[in-house]
Length: 82
Image (cartoon, rainbow, N blue to C red; front, side, top):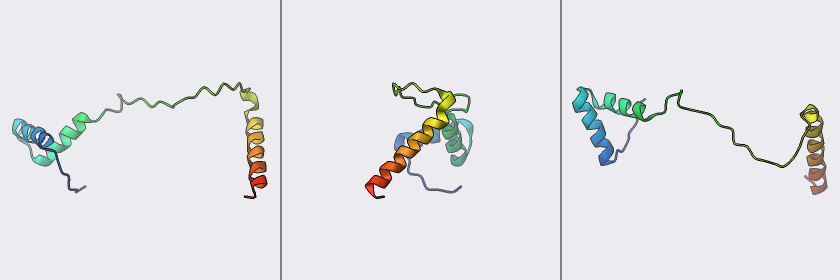
């Protein structure tokens, strides 16, 4: 991919130092620095945010609960004329 990037002076200096130290092109140095700063997949942990709703639900009856909630939403829309 080709793109234009505006680097801050300190970021450019990091790239230029990598170029000099490894004898590589600007493009190679930039890609290496970006990869070095990116978390590896092993470091990434997906977390689902949770909320304590203070609501006890029997999960064996979850479909019935969802049906009731959907019915309530439909009734509210009908009352509002939507």
